[in-house]
Amino acid sequence: MTTGTLVPEAQGGTGKNSYTALQLLVGNSTTNGLDKLALTGNNSISVITVPALGTVQISLAIPSSTVSSGGTLATGGFVFVNNTTGAPITLTLSSALEPFILIKDIAGNANLHPITVSYSGGIDGGTTYPLALGYAWVWLGWNGTDYSIIG
Image (cartoon, rainbow, N blue to C red; front, side, top):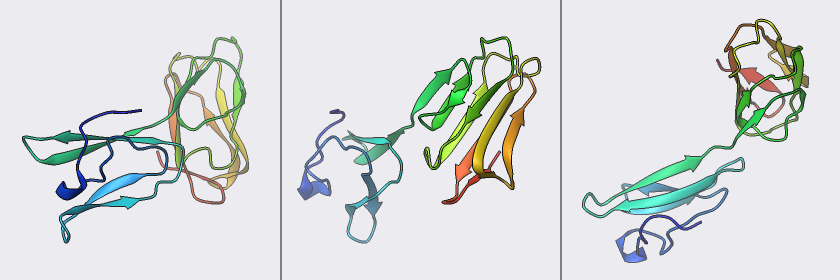
């Protein structure tokens, strides 16, 4: 992936205009340069220079997927649930899908066909979390051991 304009090293850049998973550039006011930091998760970074302003914008691509039936989730990030089964479904999490996972009922029928989010390692002291209202959602964060409900 190549995006943006090359930022020369002499101007505080790295001489590159694309970055891949686990790389993040942050401005360092002490040296007027850029420091490379590590990210956790499977995300991509792109750097875009704005020559007139002399700034760098960093964008983070967050994975997203849409599921229409129950099963084990393969990715984290944003998971949109369009339940077309006409029955309740269970979404099973594995450990550390991403630093966070947001699960959203986009069909609006969780009140009729509830969505159960399940993780055997724990979700705030339990092993399941129900989404039972139309358009319901839950935001979970991986804390290194289990999932915590953020919102």
